[in-house]
Image (cartoon, rainbow, N blue to C red; front, side, top):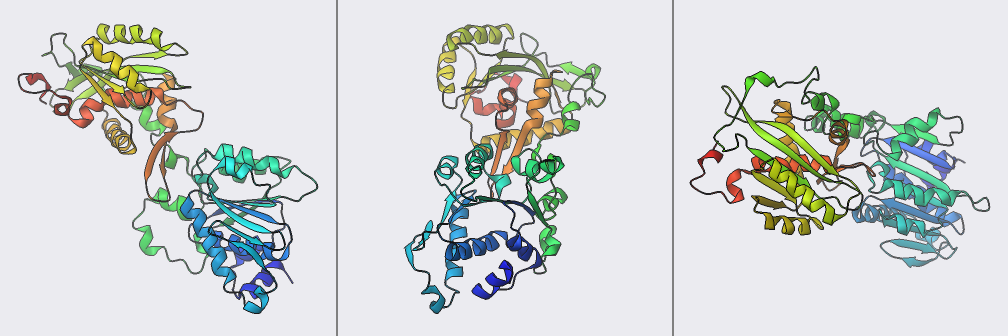
Length: 441
């Protein structure tokens, strides 16, 4: 009798063909690239409970993207347990039956945790299931915590990765797509398209999603531009000299009602632990026959590996030399001190504390400016890289987050967003009142 047939009888269930293949797969390293809603978290709960019951001293660990996900796994396990006839349950005594852990008298246990590499490192599990692995925060650290546990020869340890795709910049993609090309590939791969599940009807849902979203969530496709908010094509269109550049220099005129002939906005992103401090400067320009302004990047100062006390005079000198009309500073965390110190230099200063909503608003406005060809950047590969590296992540709770890949810099990008925040938010919100008619566009 196969394992799949045995669990069908134990829990009085009927498995889909792809669930049957997963349960019967005896590989030490398994991975599945799957559609949403095809019952993979559930079948892994089936597998885990049956092993805990019949294989002594098994420690089965589930790691999910959130506490909600971890709780869902354990609910599957508990619900399955109650489907077993009491006469059979009597043969498998429990000593613990909590929300996060089930432990049998035979020494086996099932533990379900939210994403936490340090917690996972502390469990010498015989079986590890990483649920929605592509969406785990700190997935590199989780990978580093889990994989070394497999090297012992005296205990057979098994790793199972389950996820829908999320672009090509994560370990899930590397394991499923890239490692198969290597000669020492150890992974057993499964792929479950939404059409493999006879009980899914996506006809109505499909109309509510973009083509890229549907292909990623239900068709098992690794779509890189889903996570790249700014495709290369769009970025290059905003760089002078590139064949796709949309702005023609001779069609722009300067807005000359200011004493220095320019409206200059500066954005200051203060370097935290690993990033540099970056100051970017933009000039506002107008095109004949257009009411909306254009923005031309004038300068970028990057201060790397420099003490704070040495940065301040250089930042102040740059702001004064550029005759900055507005200075917008990242006031988040340690940026608070920079904001306070710059207040003593008589700049029109605004402090911004980063939040998900502020980032989303700034990124969306930046996209519209770039798509309409109203921004021109310096021709600098660092700018291109940081724009393209920005990722949009939609969490399982439907929240949007914008962030860069782990280990990558983002200081230039957010300095640019800060510099143009005056126009995003409306200059009236910066404390300007009456008399200064130049700001009214």
